Length: 142
Image (cartoon, rainbow, N blue to C red):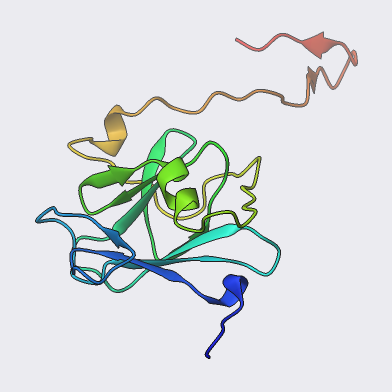
């Protein structure tokens, strides 16, 4: 009998009937992505060079990703098909799954139909006060 450790046995996501999670959508590749549990117990999704990509929604932005460890507030989309994190966790049955907290976005955010010049300019939150070189008094910014 052949036995694999749960951490090392990944699950497949795709349109093919033998995938662990079958998504019947034209934007899904036959073998779209692989999901596994890291040795630390975290859920990791890796795109399988799919045609329409795997996307992570984190901190209000969709980012195309190749491989990512999922966080509690993340959303994941395969092609145009969004899958709830709970459905991905269910693939591993009774195995204990952990989701990370407090991620920041890495990578290039996707902007659709947006001119970068139209985006709001960042505000300066803190700056050193300017002092008058003769009096040493702090000058107000105008």
